[in-house]
Each structure stands twice: as structure tokens, then as C-alpha cells.
Length: 332
Image (cartoon, rainbow, N blue to C red; front, side, top):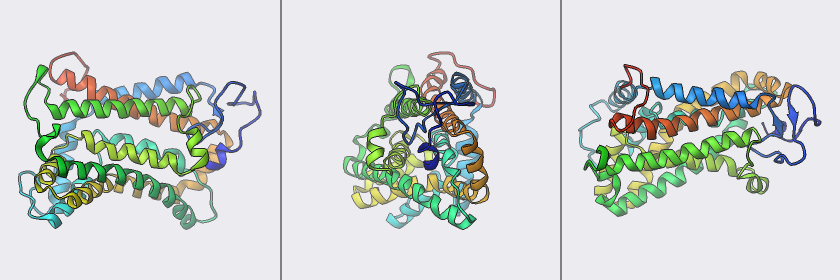
């Protein structure tokens, strides 16, 4: 990906158009190559994100998958079982983080690293070793945000919206409004990054990433860490309540950090496997036509961003019978 971004093709080259006068300069999110049919990339990606909100079943993902995984790893029923002490809470955080890998907020994570699997190296082991660096930066950004939020929860106790179970206007509780705001903002940010990858808008981190190459991955990690701020996942709420009641700042920061690391653990393993097995082939495929990398990154971000905005805002309003939104029978 880094090599691709540094070698823009001549203006007017086919099958993609390179950066021309007035276009953004190449950066991490924009590699300097504009796909020939970027309007089609935007439309298909947005349509995919919308379609996913129609068929997505929170009940199946949260209960059938999430609860089953958590119960199996913990060896007892996760829901309703009191967390007995800090060590148990730390283990509970990691396990429920893994169990929450496929919840609706985490679906966006899988778009973040897709174009970075195409690194070129002589051996499978060296490709996987090289992939550890962006993963490390991603994890660092996620841990910083989640740790700070964990400390804030431990200090604030029951005064945060996550404890608000009252049904306000339209049947929306404080924690649900918080989720709508947080994921709506994250969705808009990811949509913007997708448009930046296509050269439609300027990369907001272009100047910063030129000086600090790790900044984009740290930023994306921060977005992942921010998922905890709005997460209404039942098993996370259980950890949230235990942390708030403990008033232990160290426990809060460690537990929230481990939950976030658990969220990205499965994704990281998949990323390393794809990099090791197919990294060299993907590199050749993307460098043969550099606009492919731009289209791939843009499609991932736009689909994820549209999904987050529509799922966490419009579909929640529809579930409260405030508006109409199409949903598959099994998703209602």
C-alpha cells in the first residue's frame, strides 16, 4: 500500500486517472489514483451498507453468537452472573470482547485494513511480521481511547448515560441516544474517509501522516476504541456497571482496554492469515492497476460508514415506531 501511494501514474493514463491539477496530493487514504468509475464505487458501496442494515439481525449476532461464545469461554452463563472481583472482571472483559467481534458496531472494523494486506515480501513469515506494525498502531490507538473511557466510567460512577434506563421521548433511553450519536459520528467520519480515498474530498490527515506515518492507523484505532463509548451490547453493559460501581480507575482502564483488544483479536488473526497466504498475490493485483487499492479502501469505508449511520440512527428510530425503515422478517 505504501509503495503504491508513492508512485502515481502519468496524467491521463488508463485504466485509471492519476492526480491532476487541483486534485488532492497522494496520502495514506488517497494513493493518487482515481478509479475510472468512482461514482459507481460510491453507489455500490452505499447500497451494500444499506442492504446490510436491512438483513442484519442483532438478536442472532448478540444472543446466538455473542452469548454462546461468552458462555463457552467463561464456563458459565455470562448474563446475570455477578463479576466476582477485579481479576474475574478482567477475564470477563477479554472474553466478552471476543464474543462481541461480530456485533453491529464492529462490522466497520473489517474495512479498515483490507488494502494493507497487499504488501510484498520474499517470504510468508516476513509478510506477516511486516503486518504486525500497522496492527500494533491500530491496537495502540484503540487502547488509548478505551482506557481513558474506562477511567472516566470508574470516576463518574452512575452519573453516565449508560445507566439511564428511563424511556424518554419516543421511547429512547439515555444510553440509546448516546449510541445513536456516537455511531452516527463514527459513520460520518468513515464515509468521509471513503470519499477521501477516491479523491472526492481531501484527506484530513494528509499533513499529519506526512510527518507521522503511523498517524492514520492510530486514528483508525481511536475510532475502534470509541465504539465502547456508545456500545449497548448487553455483555458490555454488565462490565460497564461493574466498573462504575468499583470506582477503581486502574481496573476500569485495564478492563475496557482488554474488551477492545478482544474485539479486534479475531480480525487481527484473519488479517495476518490473509497477509501471509495471499499478500504477495494481492500486491501484484493492486500494483497492476493502482486504482484498485483506492476503490477497495473507499468501498470498505463507505459501506461501513453508511451501515453505521443507517443502522444506529434510522433503524433504531424505526424499531421505536417513529419512522418506517425496511427490515427483513428475521431482523425485526
